[in-house]
Amino acid sequence: MANVEILTKEMIRPSSPTPEHLRNLKLSLLDQVAPPVYVPLIFFYSFDELCFDTISHAHISQLLKQSLSDTLTMFYPLAGQIQENSFIDCNDSGVEFVEAQVHARLSDVIREPNMAELNKFLAVIPTGVGIATLLAVQINFFDCGGIAIGVCLSHKIADGTSLVAFINAWAATCRGEVKIRQPYFDLAHLFPPRDLSGFSFTPNDGITKEKIMTKRFIFDKEKLAMLKKVAAAASRDGSQVKNPTRVEAVSAFIWKNFMEVAKNKMDVKKMYVAVHAVNLRPRTSPPLSEQAFGNCWRPSFAFISTSGDEKNGCPNVLPVLRSSISKINSDYINQVQNGEYLKHLSKSKDMFMKGDIELCNFSSWSRFPVYEVDYGWGRPCWVCTTTLPFKNVVILMSTPCGDGIEAWVNMLEEDISAFRT
Image 1: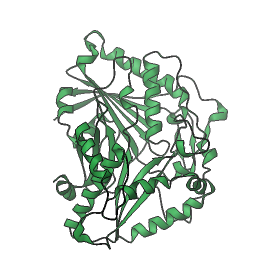
Image 2: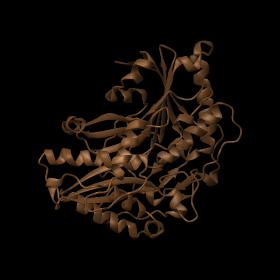
Image 3: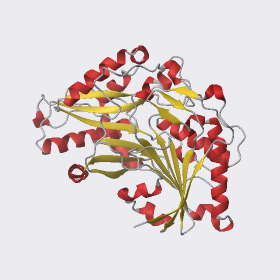
Image 4: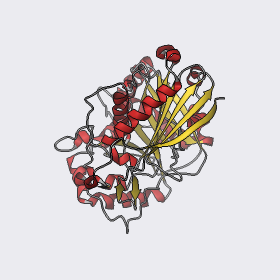
């Protein structure tokens, strides 16, 4: 068990004040409907690669704080405050910066990570309860010399793509890079904010207070090849998907097992739905840069009816998954931009509230360049997330070597053992 001792807490502000004409930044529609939780990432750097015996903790801390302050000048909204789910007051109030000492060996923590303990390496709880700052950072110094940097960014202002872009910019600033890719904050122009009163959904939809447990399942290169082969096999109706991706194969495998767990519970549903978070940046016309900061994703919905012949087991779900993602196209984006999407969102909420639909949610972070985050002492030996306050959510991340996938599965405590089996 890792004993984490908090040493200091302070607020870090941008090194240069935000100009008056940039003080108010409108939230986009996609920010408005985003859940009020933090997106957490933890980066572990081992002592063997760092040679920290010649660098004091105080020096490392000062480097991180100064570079963070400089980076916040570019990413100025992160040091502000959200007002009325409408805009960010970019008032330079700052971000939380925590230093901690971990009385344990880093190698022991990452060898068999205790999911319930990973939150100790974060400055805030990801549920977002009592959010004081939009960004919170915790620097964890291990007794062995290793370091873990925990970063939590409010989902109200950013998705995973933007979070990783910010962290890489911070790391580049820390290691002395001069040319940093500049973010731009203009998504409210593309997806104008709307008056959400009168619609049945709220940003809090989906957040649960039930006991959620997280399990990590690792799919190495060989397992992925096997899953892709199985996923590509023709189904009973002859439908077939050629050249399934790693993410498609793992998602199909997990969704099938998820449905089996529900059936074994005798939890009869009329419909099973797989939800995939889809990045809109490459799908807009013209495509947006990855530096477009904010929430720029929407969910795809794949439906499987239970009215078919149950004796033949689960159907081939991969064609359904791929088809649902392909529907996130220019016509779909136009509906988001003109506000028509809100009506569909309300209808979906009403349908899900009836209780005869079971959701399984996926978000793939496997292509995020998290293993490129180098503050000047090398790349991380492991990058992870933590438990999120959502039932039946699966986060897909790359393994350190890059050719595997880690699936972080968040389920109810009573379901996770059956799913694991």
